Length: 300
Length: 225
Image 1 (spheres, chains in turn brown, purple):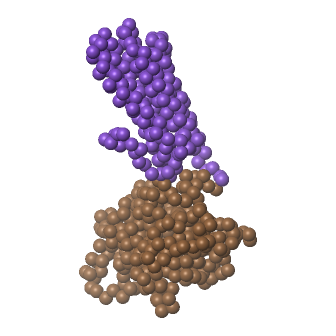
Image 2 (cartoon, rainbow over the protein chains, first blue to last red):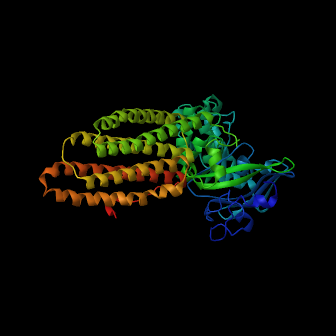
Image 3 (cartoon, helix red, strand yellow):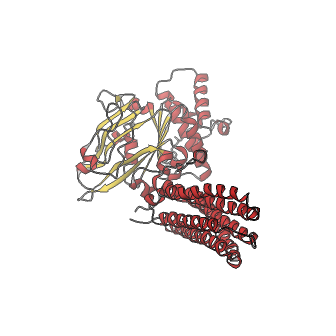
């Protein structure tokens, strides 16, 4: 597929009542999912979102809704735009000068790309955990307290101690670090560092946590710890995770969005959403042949 | 399309191949067991009993390799459904072969008893139908033919009808005491063939699940026609 009109076909288009719109172009293609019922009340919702880097359209026409207290996994081959989509959900792409987002991204019904919206406030409410653990070269305590302080915390030391303890407890790290809070965050193991980063992200009380390949630098045991932690955390947060590990998506997520990538005549690669389904359905009876080909390894 | 899991998919093909082989054996054993009964051929009946060892070996082999494949390959989507189907169909085919052995043993036990030609022809008809059901369902499996799989309940209906008729015939043998023991044994043969037919329908349900992703029972045992 190469033309823009054909790319239109690959996304489910939500309508006001949550059902996909009748799209005559989409109707010509049977290799994409148009049946998923979008939740227009999701905590974050994108509508016809395109992300450009300069003239290059990295990902096109993404309409997705992320539910409260669920884990949503974004999967797909390299270059399909899943990390680009993730970074667009809290305006992290603003930090790249050539990046531009078309379409809309709603957070609690508000368009986060509205010129009136403060991107720093968006990133406070929609936290992020990155591929490689990146604690500050500060104490474990300060790693967690830092974000809280710069967000205007004015309470007493005891109150901050409580915030730090609660965040580290929620991140399942407290028992391992409670006796060495003044040690450097960098002294921890990779898995502990990643949990510290999660504690740092949740200390400022976001309601969504974006995770970009959070376990790719971790060993299998540390990976399982993070996965268990994610399942606990979803009671209080919505989590959106990009992962290359399909089994990880299968293990932890409630819903999975599969992205693919297409080349146009000029060799430009644009990612698009193929299917968005409950994870148990996507991994047992995917609706779209492309999804099946990818997850069963019959895909190059 | 690029195949990225060649080793795994080759193993899936080998498992399916062994299952098809089991299906051929099981269907043939049903035909052979009924033919041995009709001809009172005790040597042929023993041949059916011996062949069950081949099916049992395949059954155990498929089961062992299935476990290893599940543990090592974590299949998903169509591969996961195929794995589930392989496990179920493996059991059903082994069961069909066992039912053929039951018929062969009854043939041996019925040696020397007086018999009734109408009942024999009745059982031959049932045997042909059930062997045809096994062949049809295994062909539907290999050719991924949903339409053929959906024909199985229809093919099973006359088998069930003949089985019910058999009860009425054997009840009549109560008045002819010299035929009674043989009649009761043939009632068991009839019931055994009916069970083999049900197993073939169960295989068809699995094939429908493989092809549609939806599992449903074709017939409800508590609401037989």
